[in-house]
Image (cartoon, rainbow, N blue to C red; front, top):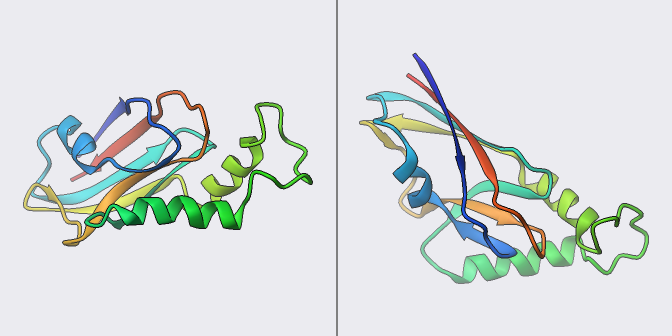
Length: 136
């Protein structure tokens, strides 16, 4: 059986945000075993799994991505929506647009320290949409 829902996240500021509990609060009853696939429908934000216990991880994500792809790069030509436009697209491609998480005993089978992150790379972003597909 396959179920699919689409959810809209609230508007988030630029940065890395743990959204695990927000996503799980929107899910229907999960199967005993299966897979949950999450796809973000945007090109300037990404979704990933990482350590969710220490808030410094979120700060360090921002620092690391800004060192890899600085907004100050004057060689970017895709800047119609501002200096964060092209850097946001590159960062989004580095992080990725989808996750697949096992379902065990009707729960997401994440590791002890793992959380689902929205990585918002725009300075002023709209709410983001996720397509969630449940495979039983």
